[in-house]
Length: 321
Length: 254
Ligand SMILES: Nc1ncnc2c1ncn2[C@@H]1O[C@H](COP(=O)(O)OP(=O)(O)OP(=O)(O)O)[C@@H](O)[C@H]1O
Ligand SMILES: [Mg+2]
Image (tube, rainbow over all chains, first blue to last red; front, side):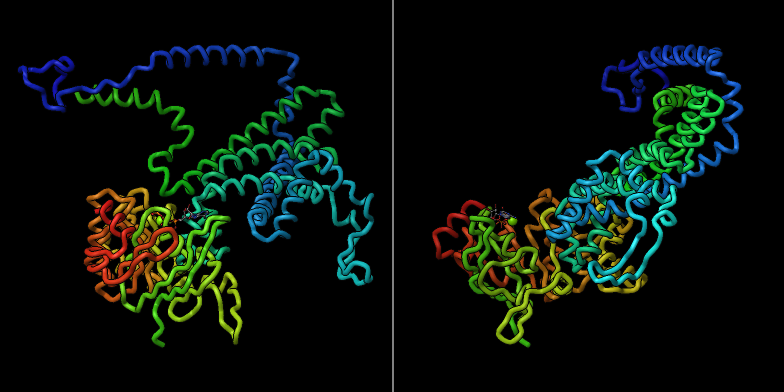
């Protein structure tokens, strides 16, 4: 590097070589000041929460890693994963049906979305939870003929866990289908035409060409849906499905420590949501292949990027001297 | 069988009330290069897309290599083809688009390999070797790992040609393959097409490149408002057009 001559001052009167200039990045003084202010405010808030006796931190500490809470956590987790999987698979199917030329497929899928998006989730959960009271038996057969292939007691089939999974998964499918449909429609029709002109059939075109490209549009809102789902599983406490929230309620029903127990719940939901952002970032990077050339930066990196690049360029400069 | 590669008789097509093709007659023999010329909106792209059934024709007859497009003749009836059968027919017809339409989530090599592996059921290793040879043929052997976004327009179009060739088509359709390119990149693509024509490929090319039509074309077809106004040997049609509309168009493009 050139020695640090005063910037832009030509040494001998003619234009200097381009490497004679030192490039000074913009200094973001405002960012540093606001960062200090924000940290101070947060520290004050945390301090006051920590000193507040009404929050009973001893109770929080006692239950944070209790066995009952872990059981609930496990239920919440598998319920989230299973309901999202069901919702996504079924939602993709519904989305493809809604984009189909076939009036029967279109009608059925529209009806599904209309019904499951149009009624409150809480009602759907209660419906599945108490379906046994509506229908004592589940039967598969040919209507009006008395021919049955399969018959079972509703309550043995629809355990609270299964009811919770069905309610959450079907509801999610209705929402996911709209997200997937928007994703599919965001892909240029030229892609489909190119695939068709190569002899690819519609199903193969969808699987190999359209859906992978739609993923870029689909993943961010699906991340949202997953986070929502994690917290919506709390609703299944009304049918005693023993998720995290059900167990928390059981505890404060006995010891009346409502606020500390809700703090325990919130801390765990926060922790789970934080963990979920990792696979999302990974998926976004994977499906961004070929499109976002430099955009594959993890969120943590971006948070630190501003200050880090400033520091790095400074230390490099110092080393260069 | 010695049927012409493309044979059109009174082909009609409309979008809603708009009559886009009003009876196209055209015959392209095996090994011929047919250049479609004409003003914007005259129906060139629509006709080209009818040939591989991306658009359905409303009337007339259209056949490729003796087989009616989109139909299977049986006795006196024409049965409409199912999607599976349409797809099978399209395997033999390569198409190159104005806007390339490469698959952006796949590298150049993966773009070329996709159809041979997934449609024709070729073994991956063999498909990869053949794809490499094709990329080499279009002068892009060193770009196989690049995604389309990392290639210039001219390079993308050459990958698109290689991708279409990978299915070993008997007929190639080009819809203004060089119109979206910077002038200095047009030559590379035209060179590839010229070599393809020299190798005996039957081609139907919608183009505004009059020079290409004159040098490479065996047949020039001038279309306007959904009809063929004039057709014949490019050297004659382009040098001494008989019709007033052809003359007016040529004076604008040249
Ligand atoms: N899918 C469609 N729906 C409705 N109208 C269409 C459709 N495709 C084409 N058209 C109309 O058909 C006419 C012919 O279009 P076409 O694309 O075949 O023209 P072209 O000769 O290829 O023109 P250009 O040189 O601009 O590409 C135009 O008026 C166009 O607006
Ligand atoms: Mg066109």
